[in-house]
Each structure stands twice: as C-alpha cells, then as structure tokens.
View 1: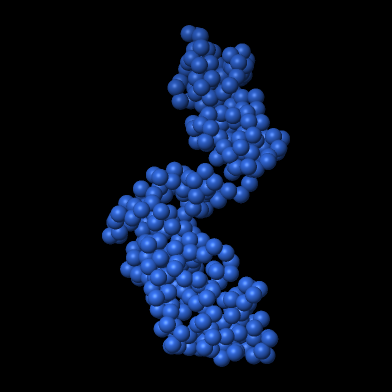
View 2: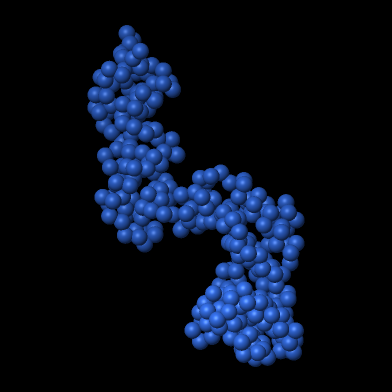
Amino acid sequence: MLSFAPRTVTKDLLSGLSERSRHVLTDRFGLGAKEMERTLDAIGKEYGITRERIRQIENHGISAVRESSHYAAHSAAFEDLKRAIHSLGAVLSSEAILSELSANKADRNHLVFLLTVGHQFTDRREDNDFNARWHIDEQVADQVERALTNLYESIEVNRLTPEEEFLQLFAKALKQEGIRNRTNDVLARWLTISKRIGRNPLNEWGRMDSPHVRIKNTRDFAYLTLKRHGSPMHFTEVAKGIEKLFNRETHPATTHNELIKDVRFVLVGRGLYALQEWGYEPGVVRDVIKGVLKREGPLSREDIIERVKRERYVKDATIAVNLQNSTFTRLSDGRFALAE
C-alpha cells in the first residue's frame, strides 16, 4: 500500500542528527540491526545520565528531524502515508496500522518512527477504554470513540452477536454520531480500537468482560461448542467438538469435570449436557418434576412424563419412579401435585 520503504526514509531522516541524538532515537524506536526498543533507563545507564535527560534528547531529536531539510525532502512519503491511513479509516489502533502497512517487525519500528515525527499524525495513548491509536482527523476520532462507547453500553453482558449483525449495530451507532457509508473493513478496524468490545474464535462479538468472548478455559470452549451445535451433546462429543472447532485437544474426562462445575451447563441425560439458557432447569429429575408442578399445578402421570422429557433424556419409568417420592402426592382424581 505504501510507495516507499520506511527503512530507507528513516535512515535518511536520522542522517542529519548528531551522533548521540541518532543513537538515542535508534535505540528508543528499535531502528538498529537488533530491532529492539530500549527503555529510557537502559539508555541512560549506558551514557551515565538520567532517564529524564534521555527523554529530553529524544524530544529534541524528533524536533530536529521535523525541522531538517531531509524531512522536507520526504514530504511525498509522509503524504503517501497519510493517504494510506485515510483509506484505512483515518483513525486506527496502532496494531491495525502496523498490520496493514508493514510486513515485518523491522518495518513496523520504522513506521512507528515515521508516524511519530510526521506532523500529519496524532497519537492517543492507551487508556481503560481504548487501545493506543493514531488519527489524521480529530473529529472522526472523537466520533468513532463515542460510537464505540455507545455500542458497548447497548450490549447485554453475555450477549453474543454474529459479526455481520454486529457490524450493522456499529454502523447505526456511527450514524448517530454523523458517520455514514463506511465499508465493513473500515468498521472492523475501528472495532479494534475498543478494549471493551471483542470477538471470540467463532467471530461472535460482545463485551470483553464476558466469558463468552474472552475465552480462558475448557468451560468457555465447551460453551461455544454447545452453542454452535444448538442442542444437547454428550460430553465426549463436546470434547471432539472443541478439537474440531478450535484445534484444541481436550480429554473427554477433563471436559466432563469442567461441565459439572459450571452453572451454564445442565445435565439432561446420561452424560448429555445442554445450556441452561435454552430453558433447561438445573437439578435431578425430581427437581424438574417439582418445577413443572409449580408452574402448571396438578397434572396426570402422562402429562408430567411428557413435560419432563422436554428437559431430560430419561426413560418413562425413571420419571414414574421419581413420582413415588414423598415430595409429591397423588390426588383422588389420579393427578399428581406437590405435597404440602
């Protein structure tokens, strides 16, 4: 996308500086052969001066570059970089810019240096809500950040939304801020600016504080596997599903243990698990019968069996045996009710 080599431009920009200024900027931005960025403290110890003094040398060096004839000579390169960023959305997270415009670590360091010295580019540092980002239009940057905030606040905590639908929601939030008709590619890049919004490995979007988005363990992978499947699964099938969907080897016994511990899952049969959010009540068959009778009142044996089998994969005889428990009483008309 860029018509110039960032490494060539930075080499020329640095050539007009004093040796110490050039050395400090090279080390701070990782522009040398080792491609390693060094801290103010590390460079200060090398020179036997304070980190604050190194910071002053760094700032002075950047100012000197901007005022140099070398900088003016490369105005076309900076304008080309500006055009590239504009085409990508005008405001982007640092990671998005680097991934789009640089092919390797070395080029990334040089690109960051050019963004830093270029007067066309403004950075906003990472904070609680947003990742580090750059922009070439302050108004657009403000509008995008407000839209991201409004989008986050509109999302239910554990809601997951497919990517295409989520991009439409974001487009509406942007429209309210005065931004219209952006491509899905631009919208996707803007979403990466937010630290509070993210997507899981199945490209479903939601709040980053949701365990359904920030996947941490086998339970979370199991949840996504069951949700994708859409109906109860045996724990051995859940383990296979995790491996197939996420290329993550998981032992069936480990999966079973994790499913037992998490209230998101309900055991609905011998080794079969469903998601509680599908309407399955937790507990054993007796608990399900209690729930049915609480909701609907006295019912015949046949009606109870039919209702329970909506939630549990068990034999009719198993339900009938549970009806003999003292929790239930048989009325004179043959129906069953909760015992008083």
